[in-house]
Structure formats: structure tokens, C-alpha cells
Length: 305
View 1 (cartoon, rainbow, N blue to C red):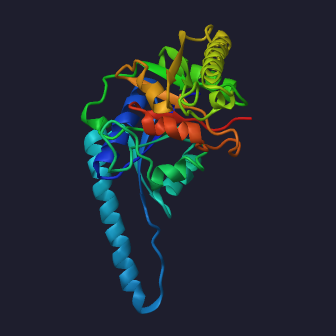
View 2 (cartoon, rainbow, N blue to C red; view 1 turned 180 degrees about the vertical axis):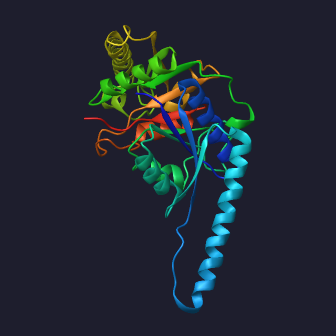
């Protein structure tokens, strides 16, 4: 996986600047081309008396697009390319533009209203995360205010299953392309193990003490299996790049993520859902929880055969 062509969706708001700061960092690290795009509603052609109104609307759209791209240019400079894309929805417009331009990744900021340093999924991200034919990279809110000077490491959220090894292999190629170390993490969610009215696997065993003991035994087996899965997944990639593995544990995915150490220039990679369409991004429940809990940028890969 390479990043020769980086496409950034930009709007003249803080979230647009967040996405652009991340896209600039990625394009610079990968020595790739940066294209900055603003998506506007399509204009229409109307005969008769309404023609003047349609002309005024087109002039307004052109003025807004020029102002938006001028702001982007003031941030990214003249090395990037700046384009206007028509589309019924920003996400759909970026999907079409990425297809036409042969982009390797689409980068955007977070929806407004969320906590600083976290990722919010709005309508644009939702469209991309359920239809993009290239990976989608999301910047946390406020990323542009204090961006890292460079990327430090790629971390892959790994869960054994169909497509998981392909995602690790693609992430390893990305690590090589970006000259970064790779970390594979898997999460053991402990909620539901043991007694105390818990729900989940541990609650299926009768008797308070027996139930707690069985739950802890099952949890220990899960830890061992998770560690073994990571070792197997990492084994085939160590000839390509530096790889480390780590089992994260918590009552929830968010708590497990908080238990890990995160470098300032970390980038998280998640696979698409196994039930989504091939060669498209399709955000599953687990990846969505990771996106919402993450404090670093998250890239969602397309599902591969």
C-alpha cells in the first residue's frame, strides 16, 4: 500500500484545517502528490425567466469555491493541486473524485461538536466509510492546532478472522513506504467475565464462586489466544519492517485503548467489516468503537478478497 496520491476534502472550518494538516503530513512523509478538493452542489441549467437565477447561483458557487481553495492554499502552499468537485453530498463527491483521480487515500477532519482530540463521524465521513473504494483517513478534532512534526508509528487493530492477515500485510507495506515501525494490537474486552451479576460468557456458569472462576479461566485463555494470534500475524511481516505486538485489555474497547501507550505521531489502522462489499470501505461495529475512542488519526482500509 502506497500513498502516491493523497486526496483531502477541505471546507473553510476548523475540521477542514484538521484534515488538511493530516493530509499534508502524510503526503510529505510519503513523497506523494496532494490534491485538495472542495465539494459543492451541482448547478443546473434552466431555460426561460429562471435562467438569471441559475446564473446567479452558479456565480455564487464559484465565488465560494474560490474562497475556500484560497484558504486551503494559504495553508498548504503551491505544491498541492486544488480542485472543485460537484456532488450531492461531500462524501459522495470525494468518492467520485478519488475514483477519477486514482487517489490512494481520502483524508478528512472530524464532524463538529465532539470532544477535542477525538474523532466524530458526520455525514461526510459516513458516506465515505460505507462506499469509498480507497482507504479513508480521519483526523481527530483539533489536530491542526498542534500537529506532530512527523509520524512515529503505525498501529494495526488486529482481530483474527477473514481478511485480517491481508490488512496486516497492507499495513506492513504502508510502514515500509513511510519508513515507520509497525505495532499490532488486539483487544481483550473483560466485561462479562466473572460473577457479580455480569453478563456475557462468564455468566453462563452456575454458582457464584464457580462462575467467577470459570470466567477468569476463560479470560486467561482469551489472553493466551490473543497473544498467539498476534505472534503468528507478526511473524510473516518482520522481514519487511520492525514489528511489535501488544495485547490491550479493558472492560470496554475504549478502556483497552486508554491502557496503551500512544506516541504523538501515531496512526491507527483498522480493517473494514468482513460483511461489507469487496474493495470498498465498510465500517463495522468494532472499528466504529475504535474510531470513536481513538485519540490519534484512524485509517479504515478497504475490504480485500
